[in-house]
Image (cartoon, rainbow, N blue to C red; front, side):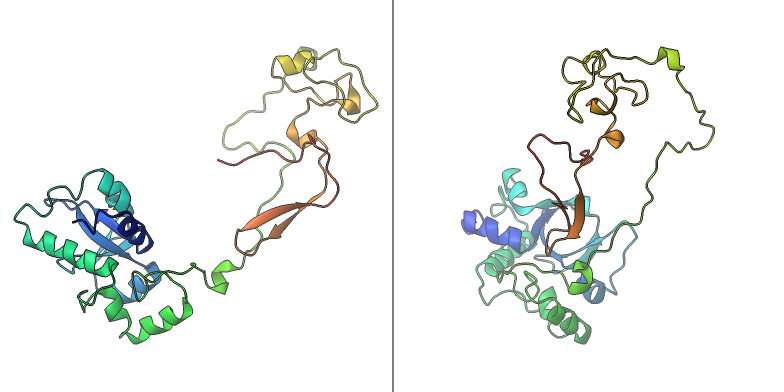
Length: 267
């Protein structure tokens, strides 16, 4: 129990994809998540339904199962919830055996079950090829041997998203185009300046009311700074694929501090 409660054990367990799983009719049980690409081969004979997208193997019973991901809790989070409390004082021998197997695995001892999933993977002809193509996959052959995870080249190559720019709203179904009469549009009293976006700042009436100016009616003309994002001039940028971090955006010209670049549309 002291081994399983150690901080270093917690770090090793997270790296080796050790989790707690809620099992109906039993206490929360320790399992190891099997890499999906290996599970498709090693667990090919294990029954599953479409909603079960994660393969696990149970410590103690050595049972293989496809489960729903929401049934799993990370090791350290489960420890905080008290999943290990009273584990070695009860009479559940199989559960205690599973914890002993887990401790042996995390300490890299030799008494790890021989028929554990990565032992089977090293003997399965299809799995050997998969493992070889995933050099550096943490826990593929030894749960305690870790390295930087690297996706295969085919999965690292990025493809430009397929989309179409829209210049105006596209209405769907029975939506009606409701236009505000020109005489009802709010017009500020700002004046144009020499700078392109020097007017319609904090003192603009429309901005104070959180209303964007109409580009055709605003008296500040081209210097209005209270336009909708699509009407603001933006510096030239270019999308590019990074080596390991997906898509990036680089500036193609010098940008002064405080310059509008793009609307933030993240979550």
